[in-house]
Length: 143
Image 1 (spheres, one colour):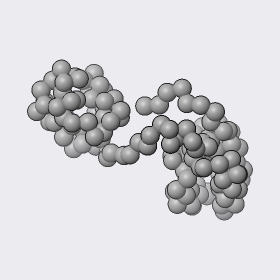
Image 2 (cartoon, one colour; image 1 turned 180 degrees about the vertical axis):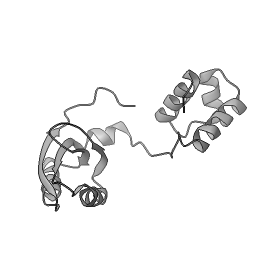
Image 3 (cartoon, one colour; image 1 turned 90 degrees about the vertical axis):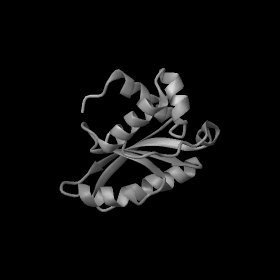
Image 4 (tube, helix red, strand yellow; image 1 turned 45 degrees about the vertical axis):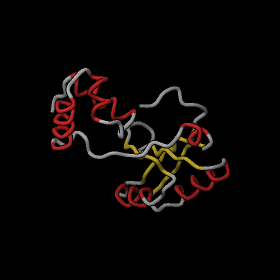
């Protein structure tokens, strides 16, 4: 589905605050409330908007140790490794990538020692060949 510039702007506003009122979004986009509501309904119906999520306060996030964890997976083990990783609540997202690693997980924990434990747990999963981690020092922006 091809999105219009207005659809892209609408999605950007929803990424900022998915709980923003239709009236507020309409005001910011310079559209009527009913137009915004029908666009949101169409984007949901067409599967562009797949759901809504919670974004925690920046102060809380800054207190966490976050890392990008690159994971090399042994041949034919991807499905079982992904299933095991999905069960780890410390992992915020998991991406299949090209290059020296097969997956990149984004992890968030309370302390550096907890990140050490998390990466050890990931490395112990059947089918994981190796992990390499990079601690996030700061986030310049996020959408």
